[in-house]
Structure formats: C-alpha cells, structure tokens
Length: 554
Image (cartoon, rainbow, N blue to C red; front, side, top):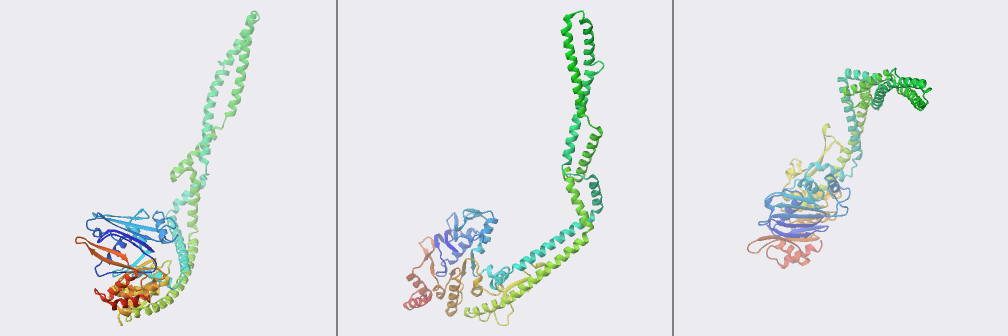
C-alpha cells in the first residue's frame, strides 16, 4: 500500500508531501490543474523514463520519493530484493526514491540502496496498478490472463506443474543418454583400445606416490652401497687399514720382546686393530641391510614410467587413471547396452507425458468452467457501466506442443465485442478512453477476490459518462476499495462523493511563477468541491444541497 508521496521540483510542483490511507481516495480539480503531474511523478518513482522535461524550470533536479507499507516476507518484492542482492529489513517500509537531473541522467534508490530503473519497473507491478487512457499493462496484457483465470476459478495447477517437471526431467535424461551413445558410437574403436590399455595397466589411486617413494629409497640405497664398498675397500683391502695395522702389530710384537718400552705402542695398535675389525663387521652388516634386488628398482621404474606415460596420453594426473578407466568402461558398457537403456527411458518419457496430459486436461476443463462463470460475472457488470451493448468472453485455447509449460497447454485471453454483430478482439485493440477504464473496472470487480497490487489507481475512469453510470462506477470503486487501496482521478461528483479521503489539485500563480499544489479537504471543503463539480464556477445552494445528498449515503 502507498503510504506517502514526496515530490520536489517536478514540472509545476515545487514541493509536495502527501500521506495516503486505506480505502478509496479521490483526487479532483479543474481541468488543467495538473492531476497528470501526480501520476507522472509516481510513474517516475516506479521506473518510468526519466525525461528532463519533468524537471521544474529553474531547478537543478527533480526528485520523487514513494513510501509503501512493509512488503510481505518471502513475497515477490522480497524475492526481487534477494535476486538483486539488496537488503530488506523485515517490518521496514519500502522507500523508493528517483532523481532526474536537469542536464540529463537519473538515479534510483530502494531503501537507500542504488537501484536501476529496470529494477524499479520490476517492482512496480507488485506495488501499484495504474489504469488510464493509455494503459498497456495489467489486465490488458494477455500474458497475465491465465493466472487471473486460475485465481478466479481457484484452480490448483500444482499437479500439472509437478507432472510437467517430471516429464521434462525424463526427456532431458533421454536426450542426455542419446547424446552419450552418439558420442560413444563415434569413439567406439578408441574406447575399446583405451579401456584395453587401462585394464592391462590396472592403475590404482596413490600408486604413483608409492612407486616414486620406493624408487627414491632404492636409488639412495644404491648410492650408499657404493660409498660403503669404497670404505670396505679402504678398510679391509690388500692395501687397506686392517692390513697395515696387522703388519704393524706383527713388527711391534717381534721387537717389543727386546724393547719393553714399545709395549704400550703395541697395545694401542692392538686396540686400533680390534676397532677396525669391529668397524669392518658393522659395515658388512649395514651393507647387507641396504642390499636390494636391482631388478626390483628396474620393475618399479618401468611401472612408474608406464603410469606417467598413460597419464600424459589421456591428459590426466596419474592418480586419476583408475577413475578414468571406470568412466571409459562405463561409456563402453552404455554403448553395448544402449538400446535397451534407451528403450526404458523412452518408455519413462511416454508415461510422464501421459501423466502430464491427464493433469493438463483436468486443468483445461476447470479453466473452461471458470471462464463461463467469469464471463457471466463480467456481463453482470457491463450494463450498469453503460456497456450493455458490449460482450465479453474468456478464450481458453490449445497451445502448440512446443508452447506447453508447467502451467498447462492452454492459452487464455480476454476478448470483447463492443457492438452487436462486431467480432471479438483483444480488449486493448477495441476499447479506448473512459470505455477502456470501465471495462477494466468491470473485470476488476469480477476478479476482486483474486486481488492484485496493493494499490490501484484509475485515471479519469468516468470520462464521458454521468448520472446513473457515474454512480455505478462510484459504487464499484467503493466495493473494490474494501479489499485494496484505491486512488481515483475523477471529474465525476458521484465518484468523488464515494471517497473516504478527498484531495484537491489546484494551480496558483503569484504573477511570475505558476505552481501546482495538492491538499486534503475538510468535510465542508469537500462539500464545496463536489458542489463546484456539479454546478461549475458559480456554486449555488442547490448544488451544495445536491452535494450533501451525494455524500451522506456514501
């Protein structure tokens, strides 16, 4: 619901702040007072083209701020916020601000967050419906007629939606299987060769790391074994340390008998000889521990090179070869058992399509029945609105196969014939002016329970009518206003008298500048305004009495 509208420097409006309430609000004023400026300003906030002509002469920019009641959580407005990455605090009002610069360009904001004009236009249908002389949205848009009929008839489309999704999922699975088989058929020879190679290789996840580590270990052991061999040669060879120590010990033993002073030297050499012999034993044991089969290193290297070569061939990591083998084997198996699988999927698609058709036919029958009731309801509203020569019908027609959807296989469109014998045609192509607005009003009354935007605006719905017809329009507007906020720009005193709140739009001129202003009327001022609408410039007592008679029943 629209709760407030603030306008700054728009055409003839310098500064204007308006508050709105529930129920029926009427806006009146003399012709040319600027009623259209209000609608243009609201349209600007709702994403209309930011024309620089809207900027008041002498001002740098025009600005409009429209405030709406807090949106319903999880509703369409909340979803649009979420889809566009905007924050929406629960329970907070929705504030839309639009600025148009005098030198071109415009900016939009939603709850102080930058928003494009496109987003404002997306929000608009969920906030306000404006029905005027050139309206091409809402009820005039056939794309929304099917949903309106479903709402009027309380038609449950959930089964057909679920059936459609199952059918499309089954069809997508069939198409994917066929595509896989087509690819597999083209690659059959390669698949068989690749699967044979991978099967023979039998790669295992993690095998490369194990082989590389083991190979590295054996290579290190080989280097150490070479070093130990050199040490053993220097220690125990014919010219090695042990041989030299033994020779030295024998010489010392021979001469120490005659020279006791050499006994200590002999003991030292004996100790060195014992340590060297112990070292020789230890080196032998170490060499035995590090010994490996050279053929094992060769086998591991061959396996490692084979894995890496296969991985390069298939452009994957060696650890992914096992998964690749499974994938290619599955593709080959699918190819070999493809026809049987395709047949099963085709059967599933046919069954899902049959279920969808059954559900769609049920919805079609419900729509056809609801169309009859809607036609009767609209027909009952036409005569009081001076449209008794017109006929209305709801067309429920079959769509081509390619146009079927989760909503069924029906095209729904509202059509009218304005004169006896005239062919039916879409509403927008026949009705014009106030007649168009009255048709929309008749439809809105018939579809009242279906609802729509929280705020509806009718611009000069009473154009060209008066008396009983204007009274009937006022009566229906008041009925609609019981379920939604309704604003009406009107020239009809019968319509104005039904308003719960009355706003007067008037021009003022101070000798240099013309301005448009809007103000709410008191009870007495309201009676005077309706009397003016009845009698013209000169307000008579009779007009005042008639105004009072119109207001009191309302």
